[in-house]
Length: 217
Image (tube, rainbow, N blue to C red; front, side, top):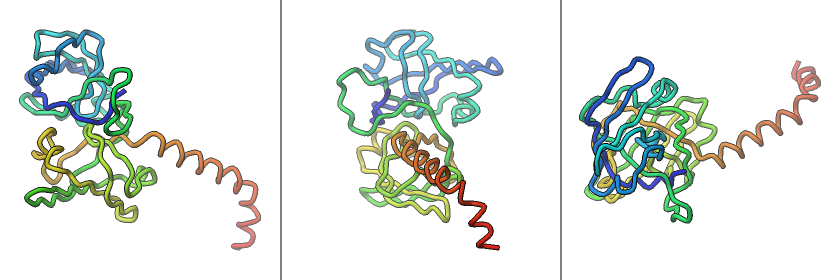
């Protein structure tokens, strides 16, 4: 479990390509690896990865399997790239964002960026099938960061978030450009509610469909 509060920016110092599996060697900020053990979970740009080796106080290894490579932005990462990181939340930890599983649902692309001296508004384009789960003022996780959607346009297929200076300082969003892909995890409670309502409506209307079709005919 993660809270969506990014704890630092890590650098991908080495990639070992094994075909259907890649090993990431990552360098972390000072103190991030304190107490980190093999088997621990770390969210890397929102993707839950398992520590396979801890080299020293600032370096750890992770194996990334094909399923994660196919559905996330991790396959496109190169040596030297930087990513948002968060260690798994401990029992009783303050949830400053919202509960995340680290299981990315899809990728979205940056469609526009508007920046002022103290604020940044980013717009993301989303495939239509996912728009049903997005609502204005609702939670969304972008590259592991818990953010609030300020505006959602379901017809045009986009949503916007505003980034405060602290978020820009603690994450990699400042380096993003139009066209870049990001990992998205939708808020699970919202997904469950939407799917429950959809299934219930279909259950109620299904017996009535023949009569409705006759009336329309």
